[in-house]
Amino acid sequence: MKRNTYVTAALFVVFALLTVAYWNMDRPTEEEAPVTTSLTDLDVVAAGEVAESNENMENEGSASDAQVGANEENQDESDREVMSPLDALRAEIDESRTQQVASLIEIIASSDFDAQTKSAARDSLNEIEGLADNGRALETVIRNMGFDDALVRADADFVHVTIQVSNMESVPTREELAELYILAGIQFGNHRNGNISIDFQPLN
Image 1: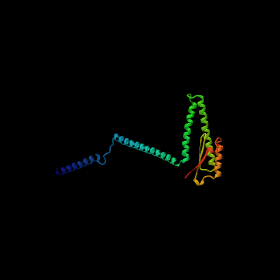
Image 2 (image 1 turned 60 degrees about the vertical axis):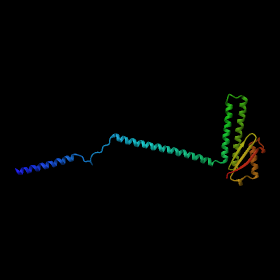
Image 3 (image 1 turned 90 degrees about the horizontal axis):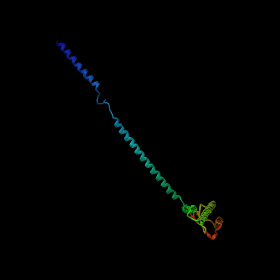
């Protein structure tokens, strides 16, 4: 009887140990516990990343636009620095001539003016265009002679020729200067030598 009691107790202990071991095997440990993330949390994270990406793209776009604007401004300043005095004066003359032509064309096309006024406007327009054409032709001839540049300003009474030279040592000789007066007189047939002025603008 005593022996049976010991056997029964031993079996009970073994059963208890097996039960504890089995229970521990089915229960996940803290390290093995699954990590869960709600869909809402993922959406928030993704939305934040998209918003940050869009903000970075906008900032990059703004910086790029600012850089383009700065480059264009620098290019404009560079162009102004490169422009010679004759080019600057030529631009002013062209702008003034354009305004005069526009005013005359407006008079010719308007019904507010009589025939005599329109006829006078046409004559003035033809004169302005003719002087401009003769001036450009003379400038081309002078450049073909080997000079750097030339600017011709002419009206009904006077012709002013400015020739750009490298320096004052490259000013034409008397013979070359006489030829220039002849060329100007030929181009502007109704102007005499007394109404033609030629001067020189050194580049340096």
